[in-house]
Amino acid sequence: MSCKKRFYIIFPLVLLAALTLFLATACEEHEHNYVARNNTAAHWLQCTGCDSVTEYYNHDYDDLYVCKDCGFNFLLDYELNSDNASYSVRMNDRNRGYEIEYVRIPESYDGLHVTGICANGFRGYDCLKEVYIPQSVVKIGGSAFEDCKNFTKLNSAAGILSGVTVVEDYAFKGSGLTGITLSDGAVKIGRYAFADCAALTSCVIPNSVTEIGEYAFYNCASLQSINLPSGLKALNKYTFAYCSALEAITLPNGLESIQTRCFAYCDSLKEIVIPDSVTWMNIYVFDYCTSLERATLSAGLDNVVTDTFNGCGSLVSVVIPEGIKGVESGAFADCTSLTELKLPSTIVSVSAEAFARCSSLKKMVIPANVTFVGGSAFLNCTELTELVFEVKEGWYYEYTESDSKVYLSVDEVSDAAAMATALRGESGYGYDLRRD
Image (tube, rainbow, N blue to C red; front, side, top):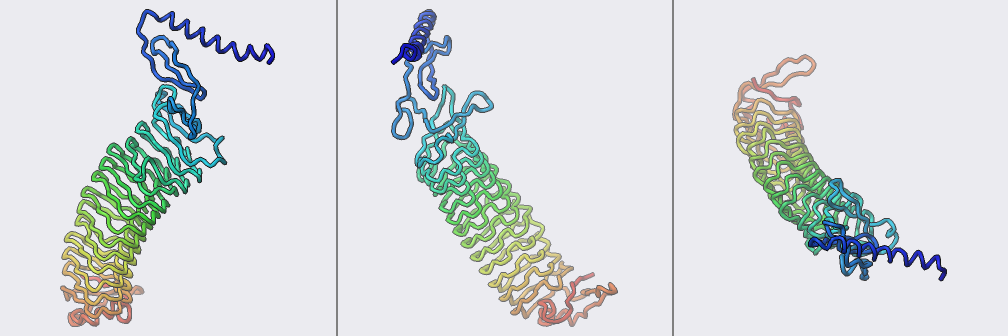
C-alpha cells in the first residue's frame, strides 16, 4: 500500500481520537449528559453540553440490515421533518429490484424520534410482506404502502398501530393487509386509505377518530365487520361501497350526514338503522344492497331521498318515522320483495317512480296530508291492486298543453283498484295527481 493511501486511512482516525481526547479534557469540569447519535456510517454518544463524543462504533448489521446495537436500518432514507425535531422515513430507491420482505422502522435517527412515514415511502414494493412501525410514528403519509400487494402483516396480524394518529390519503390502497387496529388518539383516516384492500377482514377504529375520508374502504371485498367511532359526524361518498362481505354495521348516535353511495353494492348487508341524529342523506346511499331486508330511517330526515334503496331486492320491512314529508323519485325503485309499506301521516308528496317496479307491492295507503302523487310513482307495480286515498276530494291532473285542471270524482278516487291501475302505468291518467 502506498504512503499516500495509508495517510488517507490513518489521518481521519488520528484526528477523531485527538478530537475526542480534546473534548473530554476540555470538559472535565462538568458532568456529561450523553445522548445517542448516529448517521449512515456509525453510532456514538454525544454530550449535549459540550459535544464530547464517546463509544463511536461502526454499525453492526444483522441479516435484515438493522444495526444490532442502535437499531439503525440501512434500507431506509431519513428525511428531517418541518419541525426540525423529528424524522420521517422512506425506502431507499437503491433497494428497488431487490426482494425485500421485511422492514423494521427504528424509533429514532441521529438523536431525534422517527415520527412519520413519507408519502409514497414504500409504494409498489410487491415483495414486502411485513413492516414493524414503532410507537413513535404518528403519521402514515399518502400512498405510503399503496399497491404493496403482498404486504399482509403490520406489527401483528391484527395490524395494531399504537402511536399513529393520522392515516393519509391512499396510505394502504391496494395492499394485502388482513386487519388493522388504530389505537386511541387516532383522529383521521384519509381518502382511499384502505380502498381495494381485497384481503382486509376487519378494522378497529377508536372513538377518537372524527374524520373518515371518501372511498376510505371502497371495494374491501372481504371486510366483514367494522365499528364506527362515536364522534363521527359525517360518512363520505363511497366510503364502504362494494364491501360485498359486510353483513352488519352500527351507525353511531351523533352522525349527521351520509353522502352518496356510501354503502352501495354492499351485497351482504342485511339490516340498517339510521339514527335520528342524521338530518341529511345524499342519493343512492344503499344502491343495490341486494341482501338488505330491514331498514329504519331517521326521524331527522325531511325526505326519503332519491334512489335511497334503489335495487334492494330483498327489502321487506321499512320503518319511515313520523316527521318525514316526502318520498323522492326512485327511493324504493326495484325493491321487488316489498309487499306493503306504511307511510307516516306527515308525508305530503310521493314523487315520480318512487316505487317503480316494486313487483310484489300489493297495497298502499296514501295519508291525508299528501297533496302530490307522481303519475308514474307506482310504475310497473304489477301486483298493486289496492291504492287507498284517505282524502277523496280535491284531486286533479293537468293537461300539459292547456294547463287545464281535470278533477276526479269522489267515486273515482274511492275505487282503490282503479287508482292502482292508473298509477302503476298500465292505463289511466298518466299525469301527476295533485290536490287543492
